[in-house]
Amino acid sequence: MHNLTKIFSATLLVANTGFALNSGLVQCDGLFLLDWRGSKASAKGCSASDSLQAGDWALGASVGKTRYHLGYRRDSDRKNYSWNLKMGETLTTGHISLSRDFKFFGVEANVSALPAIGVSSRFHLPDSLLYAKASINAGLLELSGIHWHSDWEKDYVPTIDATYQSTILAKSFSAGTRLLSHRLQGEFFYGETSPDIENQWGYAFSDSSDFWGTDFRYLYDGRNNKVQLSYAYLYADIRLFGLMRENGDEVSEKRFAYLPLGIDANLFQANFLHKFQDGDRFTARAVYGTLEINIPWESRRFYETLAPNRALKSSTLKTLSFSVFQRSFRVYGDIDGKVFDAGLGYQWNLNVGRWHLLPKATLDGFYASYIAKLNMRMEKTGFFHIKHSTSTWQQEGYVVGALAGLGTELQSPSKAFFVSFGMEQIIPLHFHTEKGPDKGPAEEPEPPDIPDINEDITTEKNKGRSLAEKWDSFSSLVFRNGFALQIQAGFRF
Image (tube, rainbow, N blue to C red; front, side, top):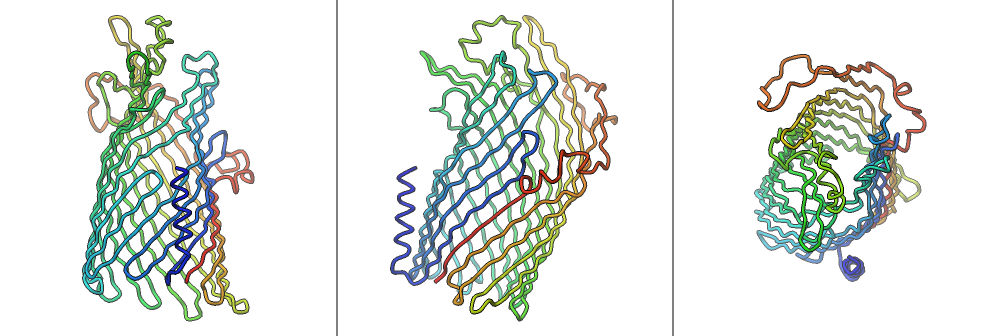
């Protein structure tokens, strides 16, 4: 990774010597999504990028550092049911790309710091009356710093330190047409991931998944107005699993976690921009998305959602009696969600001497809702029998809020140099949740070996509660929850 950083830095240096068309950018971002009651989700990082073009050749490069942190805290009156889950690390990011254009086609190759490599080829008629592109990308997905810790010191598995690693192969094909100021294009992509854990020991996570999707866009690029309409669809069949791998006289491998997921997502977007004669700009946008997650029922042995006894090391497992730690869990159900967002923005074009100042403000309103119904079957294994019971967890809710943004950009007289600053804050206005059992009949019959769902589930309603009642203090949440910050500096010549 260190050698790859040197290559990026050398490429950035070469990019600034002797080329006619050149542009560079230094950018720092911060996303502080959640910091509340022990749970946290945040990311921050900085990057530098440069691109240049000489004749039919184009070269681009970037290098940066990104730090992310995800955490979830579960509290319970019983100490052995309280735990922390954390994941975070510092990543070196970057890429190098090289492309060449010919009369009717072009080729491109790129390498990124995942690591990953990709190649693509494109075809186009004069004036882009018809164009098409095909690409293939392969890489390694790796996450470290996954840490689970139990509050109960006497727990048989007090801590889990794990890594996630898998390979990915993705292919795509796109085609489009351009007529005057109108452009219409579509894309189809598909791919798969495969486990890559041969050199991983201890607790290792990976997946074996398939996915495919489409993306359709219409663009109008007029003199003073721009319109973009798009629709994207994604389907994924994901199979996540966790293994305990020990390297002794013989390799020992036990699967203690397995979670199949079916994901179906739709996203509609509409964007409009109008440029006034004085340089001011007005923008409007609307977004609507749906997400359906299905966790199917899995009855096979060794395919339990969680089997804690298989997470034990072999040396620990031999010291326990057969009746200890023989519980396993199977989770199945559905989670459906949708979100709608609409907003307006305005950017002013002001002259400060010969310099250009471009302040802007945006305001969005959003609505998001979800419905979840998850069942958990607990199994306890004996010598000659398996006892099991099934419970359900149901909840639905929605949130209504606003997204406010402020920013500004300062450009040099020739517009060859610029600096910009922007920030956004999510402002929840109303939050509602309702939890309880399903009193109606099931839409589909359950598998024959699954017992009826228990009816002694506590019903809990939190209707119309304000944020002041539901959260500790609103003032302590601002800038730590739903806050984003971006700073840029760049040049163009």
